[in-house]
Image (cartoon, rainbow, N blue to C red; front, side, top):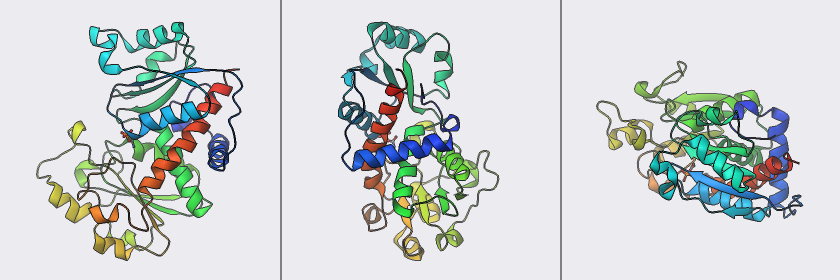
Length: 293
Ligand code: CP
């Protein structure tokens, strides 16, 4: 695998290989990288988890992380993304991890760029490393995907997490359901607008963040109204079946997508997802860098 751009390009075999390698890293296995690699993280949108997690993973697999601050880079003088990445390639990077507001920003890099590109989120497009860490979290919990009922709740139309996860989970045999306000349905015509019935049958309730930065609010939207109709309240959590888990890619709008008291409840894997993200990103970075030999 030279790049990680979209989960659509990752086969089921490659997904399982990354989950297996992530489990090995969690069990304490050392890196298989034998040479020093240089990696830079180019985040043109805010990030706490993904950026820090990739940096940690890169260091843990023995790569050298070269600092890059998007807010102090020559992109502010009008340099294109292509020229920025080509410049870093010529300086000696082996891989770049990029988050960008434009959907499929990576398409302009596919011709002429030899450095490996890992997509850390493109607009409302894809978030493949989040998808893989979510799959790892689910697989650790249930040991399978086949037949699991996964309910994705929230702004599915703007969510790169929903897009990546739904596609991968369906391909791996899970039953994926969508619940959202009509205004956020997008291409998901099968989405329901009431989710109480699904609470009893879901193995995984995956909540999505309300993306205020993407102007997601519709006429009449209020955080209180959203929480009452689509938020995971304590009453709804009590209706979830035994063994069912709560996930959220975070950052969480406490009291909007989920009652604040539930963020660290027994069913919640929200912070466990963050922990798992480091092992999964170690597996991703190692796989990509080994693939360059
Ligand atoms: N889940 C996620 O992508 O979080 P950050 O925006 O903090 O990276």
